[in-house]
Length: 323
Image (cartoon, rainbow, N blue to C red):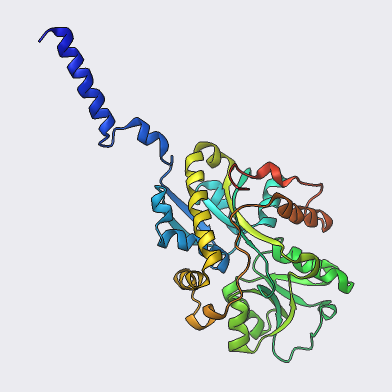
């Protein structure tokens, strides 16, 4: 065999080995996520059920992602963990996300939508026998919220307005959702803001009474929360972000179509019992971020002084977030 023919054979063999892969295929590596293991911080609420579904159904795995979850007490409280890189993705209410972004201290991107409020999802509740029977009675009272200056305080502020009250007419106190019913029962707070499943448990075990549905009237169908990454993560790991979005979208479609799947998923990351899970009023799972709807949050924040000037939410939406 001539040297030229021998060289040709070796080249063909080398090309075949490359094409067959064995872990050394540059083309294959270029299509996978840049970061294959991602850590997601999330509240133990129904709105993150699609994350659990995507894990259980193998949707993340099919995208080449290994997902680890960590329960948090609130989006604002966990924001430092997102910035430091302890978390790659953060489930956060939109108020905390917009506050952090508008302040300029954190550059974030919204990569997915989590939830929009539906009737019965978030309630203001009083202790059984409380003299507080209407929103106007809240003046001078203590209201328990999971985090200060987030969507809880903003939405309560909006609820107070028609009753002739201002935010500084009440006192907001922080308590994690799992501890909120106990705070109400012990008198640490006069009124508790409780989402599903916590308000059902408070009503059943303590006899807590509904004072008002929080997201009604002008706050109907209000966007609650989404999924965030830092701008740096979005720039450095665009394929990981896209893989996360595809898996989340698929799981959200399942959550929207099959309530039983959500009920089963809930019991894996919350302490909710089967009876409560089966009777919960689920909110609006969304497969894409609606910029106009999230802008409602920013505009309400401007009205109540959370923002000093109008903030355009489109500036923080990542590619693929809005569908």
